[in-house]
Image (cartoon, rainbow, N blue to C red; front, side, top):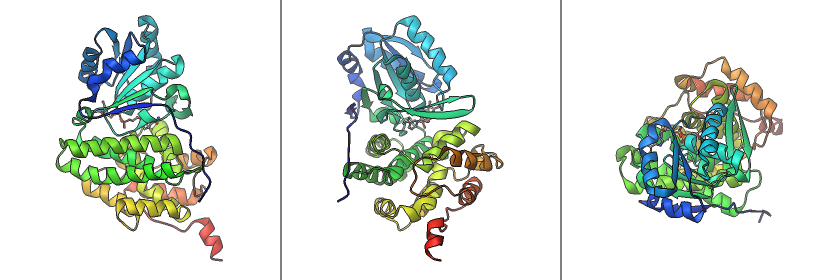
Length: 364
Ligand code: NAD
């Protein structure tokens, strides 16, 4: 058995239909008296509901959260926190609202309660990505890990099918990359594999019946496990590429994950055989890259970076940043292979597993 180390991250999770009703009790348990509620513009109605539930513990609402956590948005929210003397944060929404809550917590150390409405999984991680001047940087800090997470399946029923699909792929990317974590442990591998299994089975059911609470609950559970896997296992090339493309070209986060995941798995497959075996088991298919590409295709998810705003000439720029950044990945960065891989993802072609430099050398 491989030696391993696991350190648990402190967070409280309340999971169940109607769980948001516990919001006031959870806020009181954290000792909060005036909570700022943050959300995106389209989620203001749910934010108002949260405010009602908070009663006397409710404070101002900031509805300006935006994708990739732009620093100027955080600064605007910070003025409200300071002016209104908020002593806690409720983030209700997807990764954008949660990212804003985390960015405020980083600057203030205020406690956070998060009610996720997508499957992005940010609520389980001590990781914050922020964007400034077209560059997205990521940092880890215990300050940004939310103290309490309330998973209420009813909040996710309204998530449009298209967003559910891409958000679901985002969650599967967390599980998939954790399977080839630099420092794996048995708990991590079990959670990561289950993330992919649960989500891959839930997504077709959500497409057929978007209001199915069982399918939605399974997806939300996968989001939880996926976020937990990302927090505990870290990530590799796939997440770095998504952040680079998101920061440099403003590509939407979950769609970028959906398109890139099969291609990065094909790129890494030769150097991560155990991860591929677990993914094959979770997806019940011999090639995880093909299975995820086919799943996305059959459910109508996006397949081409060119369709979500990526300029073709951006490929070289992205590869240069990947090589310059370095970081953990089972397969070393190979600029020629990465350029070809991104070319396929840009055009919407099938993923292709090419021989790695190690394989070419070992066959000489
Ligand atoms: P998002 O939060 O931007 O939500 C996408 C859209 O869906 C938004 O317009 C939102 O208002 C809407 N929406 C959300 N929930 C809804 C619901 N239930 N019903 C109807 N509409 C709903 O997108 P996302 O993919 O959840 O999050 C992306 C962001 O999260 C990115 O900035 C990404 O970097 C970050 N993220 C961070 C981590 C981390 O660990 N730090 C992990 C994953 C994602």
